[in-house]
Image (tube, rainbow, N blue to C red):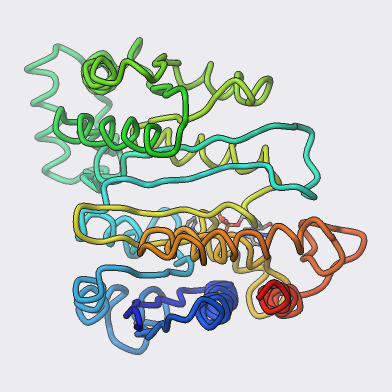
Length: 362
Ligand code: NAD
C-alpha cells in the first residue's frame, strides 16, 4: 500500500532538510514494504513569488485531503511583512498540540546526561493568536480607553497591544492531550508551566484547568512551575523533568531551551497534532545563513519524519529510522558541523550515510 503525504519543502534550508527526510522515508518504506506518494506543495517566500500567496489554497486542500504533511521551516519576516505561515497553518487546521521531544541521543556532545523531556505546547491561543493592535490606530486608542474605563489602568497612548487569549476549552484540550500522551508513552510526571502569579486571569485559568484535568490521572504525578523558575530548573537539573505542558509562548521558548540541552536545534523534531490533521516539522527555522550550502543538519527533519511514520501506524519503520540516525550520530564520522565541529560532512553525505545504515540493517 502507498500513503499519500503532503510535502512542503519550505524556505532557506527547508528544501535541503525536507529533501533529506523524504529520501530517508522512501528508503525505510522500501525496507518495510510500503509506499509513499508525496504531494509536493508550496508555502512561504517562494510560494508568494510564484503563486501570490504565502499559504496557497491548494496547499491547505492537499493537507486536508491527505491528513498528514511533512514540512520544512518557513521564513517569517521580523517586525513587519506577512504573518507567520506556521502559525496560520496550525490555526487553520486546528493543530492544537505541538509535541516537542528533547532526548539526549548517544554520541551527541552535551553538558548533561539522562535528559529525556517532552514539551507539549498549546498551539492555537495565547500571544500567538495574532490579535494585535498597531500603535496610533483608532482601534488601539479605543482599546486603551476601554481598558482605562474597565480597569482604571493607564496604557501609554503610543503603545501597540497584543492580546493573550487563553480559554478553558484550549487549556483543557491541551492538558488532556499531555496526560494521555504521558500515559500512552509510560511517562511518570507532567509539569504545568505558567506565570499565574502575575497573569492571574489568563495563566491562572490555564493552571486551574490543568490542575482539574490532572485529578483524572492519579497514576501520573502532577506539579507546576512558574516559567522563569522552570527555565532555571531545566538548566540545573533537567533529568528531574518528564512531560511539560505549556501555553503557546512559554512552550516555544522552553522547547528551544530544551533542544539546547540535548545538542541544539539541528536535532530537535516536532509534531503538530489536531483532531483531523497532523503536520510534522523540525523545531528550527529556515536558518538563511546556512541555506544552499549543503551544511544544515538534516536530523531534526528526519526525526520529525520518524514521528510521522509512528503517527500513520508504521511503528517499526519509525523505530528503525530513528535507530539509523542514532547509529550515524554515535559513530560521529559522517555528521554535520554542529555535531562535530572538528570533523564533519555536509547535509547530503550525512543523509546518504543514514540511508546506507537503513539498507545495512535490512
Ligand atoms: P533558526 O532556527 O532558523 O536558526 C537559529 C540557528 O540555529 C542557526 O543560525 C543555526 O546556527 C542553528 N540551526 C538551525 N537549524 C539548524 C540545522 N538544521 N542545522 C544546523 N544548525 C541549525 O532560527 P532564526 O534564525 O531565529 O529564524 C530564521 C527564520 O526561520 C525566521 O524567519 C523565523 O521566523 C523562521 N522560523 C520558522 C520556523 C518554522 O518554520 N516552524 C521555526 C522557527 C523559526
